[in-house]
Image 1: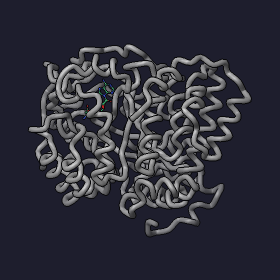
Image 2: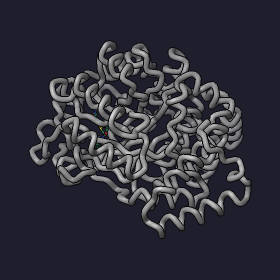
Image 3: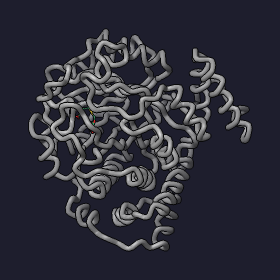
Image 4: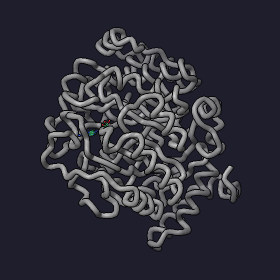
Length: 440
Ligand code: SAM
């Protein structure tokens, strides 16, 4: 389905930097013309820091054209770390004797979600280990039903093991909005080296999982590669080729492309990334995703340090997690954060501090979930976004959901600071006047 040989050749191709070509590609991208793999590989080959910085500015411009100034906020909710796979880099790997194993009961999952909604989140990413018996489709179904019935969560994304079409249909029918699986690496030989036992060993079963999800009725899916496992030029090109493949065959780019970078995990069998990616390259990768796949949400997690996450907001990212725990039960303290966690976190700031940083950059934190609730999913979302119409919905909705969040905030000093920053942004363009009470 993906032309791996071509991707490999392009990822190894060395081309001299050519300013004329760079300008042409940027012009194409800003006009929302699809870039060829050759053009994307040229962008990935840029090494000069000043040019990378220029690239990031253009990516930010495109992000603003498509999504406006808003940054979507979410938190992950880890349900289970009882994994039957052995992935050498992961703390959940089945042989990890340090791992405190835990699968949340329905009641515990509801409590975790209530904790998150009290903090202000309305969107959560459910994360499960791969174990059909313990956290398979029936378990996930029970959890999803309870979270929609008993909490104020408006949209659930799911990162779980790849599944069969009928299982995915069951999960879609109970209202999971986005189904997410990362390929980790698209390089088959490397994939086999790092996924040594369990169902995840099967490279092609994982690769074809989005085809099954979209066949099962999902409109929105999330993909990504784990940076650090193999040459990023190959993996990023392949991720983009995967996105193009989905658009060609199912009418839309993936809803999200996540950009996880390998982190130390206690008890993992590989502790350091075999192909480390430095911060400048990380920014370039985010920018290239934005230029090549303009309507996908680009997601940055708390694996990354606070300062870099702030800078990445100006390189084209559009969604970030905050205040995350990667241990089942980590929010309500049933399991201490570090025990049973999947990897160590870097940005441990509170949600309030993340919000203040977003506002300091003149951007708008958003808890909005209305696209999902109003059926602006998949191809519908893509067609609106590519014409620049999504941001018309987003800005007002972001303002409304944010003001609702501030209203309930207990920390008065942070509340004051947020309001001050908010006023500073909107004095200029009178957006406050455009504020509406009902979400569009
Ligand atoms: N069901 C998932 C799976 O497929 O393995 C388990 C959930 S896990 C949160 C999701 C992603 O975390 C994995 O797909 C991988 O990309 C990433 N991950 C695993 N180990 C990691 C590590 N040591 N550092 C950073 N990210 C890691």
